[in-house]
Image (cartoon, rainbow, N blue to C red; front, side):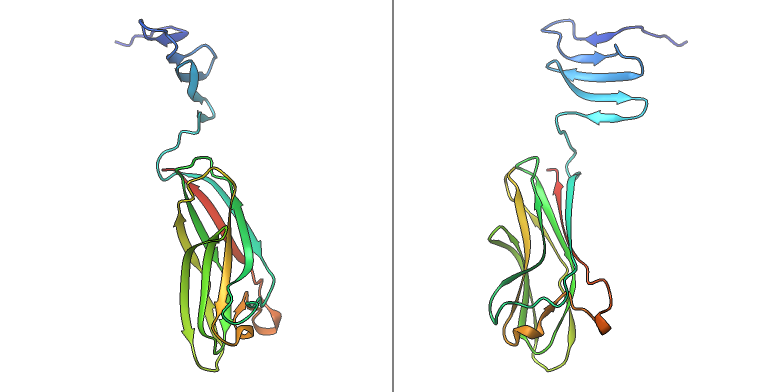
Amino acid sequence: MTSTIHADKIMNSSGDQDSGVDLLVNDQVKIKTANTDRVTVTDATTTIHNNLHSVGTIIQTVASEFTTANVNPSANQTWTTVGPNVTITPKFSNSKILVSHSGMGNLNNTQYAGVRFLRGTTDIGTHWTYMNIANNAPISFNMFNLDNPATTNATTYYIQIWSDINYTQLRYNYYGQGDGGTRQSVIMAQEIAQ
């Protein structure tokens, strides 16, 4: 036996009656608390209001590309900002920001060479390699970092490179044979719900 209850609203029978299920609009169900819509379901969409997100959900993604070839550090033993940067404005101060960078390069007898992420002026992750022979070799500038900026202010991430010696021989976005390829490096920031 099947029963049907016809109602426009379902609310608690005591208290201020400002929470419950709203069925007033055809093909739409709203769940409310404190007289505020929390979830709306229609025949086409489900909307979660008030920025409620499950832990691990990607809230937003911002990316930037860079195609300038053969960018060098400005001098030996000098961190130099190169490539793309990306600015993200977190919606929640407890969110983590997953920062990803993809890019290639070339080096030749630079001894130590480094690449790092900056959040503003703060180093949030540095990677090193070493090359002490006079021979061109590829270098990967691919990096990931899970950052906790603890803010809802606009936050900018940068890439920097560093060469111990022969700084003109460390090339970010190396142009390749005959200036071929797209030389596209990308930095991406994703806000992750906590």
